Structures are given as C-alpha cells and as structure tokens.
Image 1 (cartoon, rainbow, N blue to C red):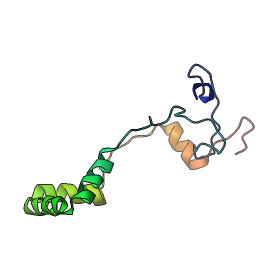
Image 2: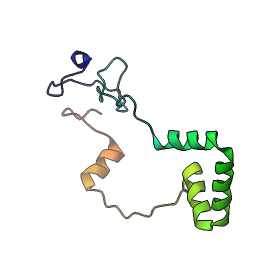
Image 3: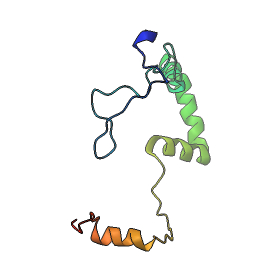
Image 4: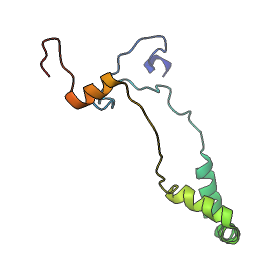
Length: 110
C-alpha cells in the first residue's frame, strides 16, 4: 500500500479549473487518508443514544431547561444567524482602475 502512495518529496502538479477546484483524475492531496479504525465523536454519540433512547430523552430535557445550552445546540444544528460585517476598506487606485476597466495587455486590448 505504501508503494501506491505519492511520495511526499515528489513534486506533483495539481490541475485546477478556473474556480480553483481540483479536476477529476488528479493525485490526492491527502494520499494517506484517514487512518483505518478512526472513530468520530459524533459517531460515538449517535451510537450511545441509539443504544439507550432513554438517555437521549434525559439529555434533551436538560438542554431545554438551560437557555444557554439550548441556544448552543440550536446553533450547532442550524448554524449561527448571519450578521452583517461593516468594513472600511481602501483599495489602491490601480486595483480600482483594474476593476472598472478590466485588464489590458501590452497592446492596450482587453
């Protein structure tokens, strides 16, 4: 199996599309992958609750009693609400011109 892995010292060119995504058929960026037998914490939690549904009911009832826990769990499940971010950014004039007029080659064509 080690022979199949890309040598870490080997330079491998990864081809990407215009959005930076790796094209199909390229070498893996993580050739060793996740080690066999690795267990995630979420898999363990699911297993515990599946084996003992009463334990899950107790867990949920404790969360419902505590506002901060309830908010935390909801944010983990649904994500945090979107918030606007105010930023004051000053772009260099050359970048502003590039955005307004596009890139030109040496002949002046865009």
